[in-house]
Length: 213
Image (tube, rainbow, N blue to C red; front, side, top):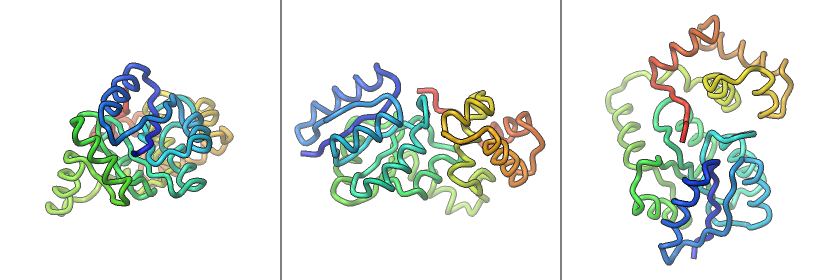
């Protein structure tokens, strides 16, 4: 039996996924969380085998929560479950040590397969992500400019694209507004941008979207 912690800020989504998973005899949903902070706390309390983690949620979000869980509980396997299949987030999450990446368009069977493969010690990319990465490698085309950003810089970019201001980003990431400003200037320098309008245009050009589900 694989014990799973489900993390998503949409109650309807959580309930639907939980029902699907609990219809599988080999999977047991031991808990649900609606924020990254809750996820970190419940991982300590429940010791799940696998965490299904959404990315964009209130508070620190899934990227930061996954990073903290990896640092504190390296034996817990993390699978990202999100609508995001483009942009810097998927590659950044894989680089940061998550064990699987599945989009919410996947089938029930593929989600179950991902959980079982990851729990057994493997890694899993959904078919959509695997195809995109394979095409990118075979075509030899340049990667998105956003892929040169650090994990924290990607977080700041995604929150900026959500329309959050300096103080809101600082509060979510538990850092000062001055530090957020420093990150934003580094992002502008790396991407050769001048302001948020140019950031938005570049994001649209490279299909960098904000997870809304």
